[in-house]
Image (cartoon, rainbow, N blue to C red; front, top):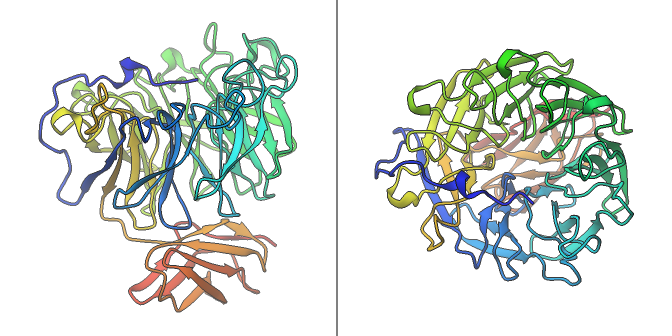
Length: 497
C-alpha cells in the first residue's frame, strides 16, 4: 500500500497569509477531512457523476479506518457513501484505496483497492469493485486466488472502460514472472460481471526491458489500443530501471514505446508514476516524478510511434517556484491547454497547480500553504478534473482546518474563468447508441445536436440528458441548446461506422 509518507506532506516553509491567485482566478477550499469522514484523499482525480456531484476516495479513516468512498457537491457538502473494510473476512470489500473512481456507462462507479479481498493474509491482495452513488458496493474480483498470484496483486491504479464495454486496469505486483521480488505486475481485463482475464505479465523480457510496476491508469486511444506507463523497468537505469511508456492491444500484445533515462543524466525524465492524457492530434502528454535537467521531474509529449519530447523540466525557476515532483497526471481542459499539480515546490514549498500549453509554456496558477496553517491544503498528490461548470476540482493529502497532525487533506476548487460545457458518456458509439449528456442547468434544454445533426432527447434532471446517436450523425461536437445559451461538448463525439 502506498500510504502517504510524512516527508511528503510536511510544509517546508512557514506559510504566509497571502493567497497566490490572480484577479481572474478564484481558489476555494470546499472541505477539510477530519478522520471520521476519511483522510489522505487518494492519488486519483475526482470524477463527476450524473448528478453533478464529485466522487472520490480517501486512503484511510472513516468508520472502519480503512478508507472511504465519498461524494462532494460543488458547494462543498461532503457525504461518505462507503467505509471500506466493512465486510468480513479480511476486508472483502477492499481496504486502503489509492486510486480514483471511474464513472461507467451504466451510471455506477468502478474502482480498485490495493488491499482487502478474500485472498492473502489479513488485509488481502486487493479487489475490483463497483459502487452506486448511494453506496451499494459489490466486490467483483479478489486478486491472488492462486498460488504465487499469476493474476497479479496490489491494483493501485484506477480503471478505464474501453469501447467494448469491458474494464482494463493494472496491478503493481505479482503476475506470471518471478524476475522481480513479489512479481512485476500485470495488465488485466474485467467484465462488469467480474470475469477477469490477465492480458500481460510484466518483466516478460530480459532485464525487464518491457518495464514493471505499473501504478497508473490506462487510456484508450481512438485506434482502440490502450496506452500506459510503468514506474520502473526498461534498460537504462541500474538496477531497477527508470520506467517505460507502452502500448497494448485489447488482445494483450504489448509494445514498449519508450524507456526513460535514454538521455544522459536522465534529462528526459524518470519514474513516470502517473498515467497519460491524449490530445486531439493523437499524441500523449504525461509527467515523470524525477529526472529532467534539475532532477525534479518533467512534462513530456510522446507520439503513438514513441517519439518523446521533453516539454518542461521542473525547478527551472528560483527556489523551485514552478513546483517539484509532479506525481499526478495531466488533463486537457476546454481551452486546449493541459493542467496538473506538483507534490512539492511552489512559493511556499507545499505544491502547486500549473497550466502548460501543448508547446511547453508553463504557468503556476496556485501555490499551496499560502494561507495561515496551510488551511488551503498542502501536497496535491492527485490530478485535477474540470467540472461541467468550467471549474477545476482537486484534492490535497494534508493541510486543511481539521485537528489532524499536519491536517487530513482537503477538496478544493479553482476557477480560471473557463465557461460551462457538456460532456458525453460514452465519447463514441454507433448510430442508435444510448448516450448520457452531463452538464449544468439542463432542465430547460430545447435541442441536442451531434455535429449539427438533431437528436431526440429526454431531460432526466438538471445535470443529465439522455439521447441516442441520430441517423446521419458524423464525428464532431455535441451541442445542447439551453435558455442561457448553447453548451458545447468538451471533446468530439466519435461516430463509429
